[in-house]
Image 1 (cartoon, one colour):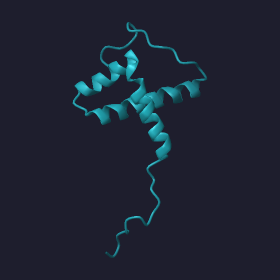
Image 2: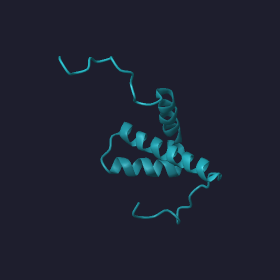
Image 3: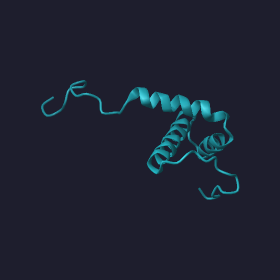
Image 4: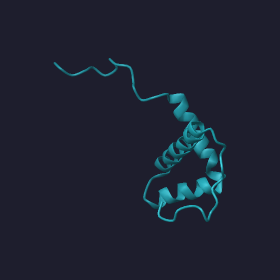
Length: 87
């Protein structure tokens, strides 16, 4: 085993597990929202499994939250006609 690290020798660098769990549960709860449900269903139609689609939704919600904080703006619910068709 010369040159290889032993499992558990280094601390995990996978991020904040509690924060990840909070975003995952928030995404799961957001499935009742039509906009989030549409995004989730689009990911499912692309062939992603349920958990992978939820993780994508959680990442998207995290990105929106970051943009709100960065731009110091409030959340604006997207209008159906303003959503790009190709995205």
